[in-house]
Image 1: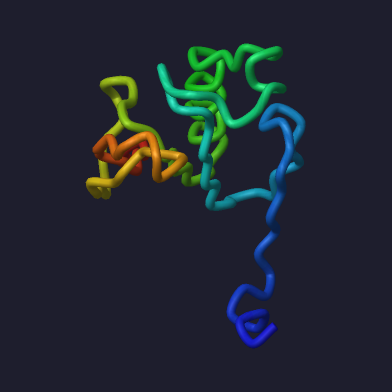
Image 2: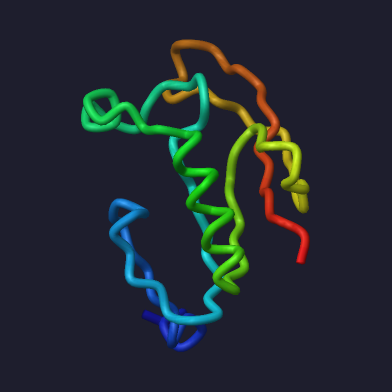
Length: 109
């Protein structure tokens, strides 16, 4: 609650990206299931997240005037990496730790 004033006016949604109502000129942060990794839930496995459709949607939102950031390991060539950090990818401590480089991508203005 102490931090609530710092995020006043920010709208957070946990929904299918295609169903979102997005105000004009928004900053959009996306954290989709990463390509070739364990999915978030059984629902992801059932729905088979379509990464190609997602990247087309990101481009369309950019073309609509939004600034879009996507967290992923890799992105299509027209996207640029604006941040990266090496991370451990293990979900449990007993499976050992795999290293990866998480990145944040966006399209040039």
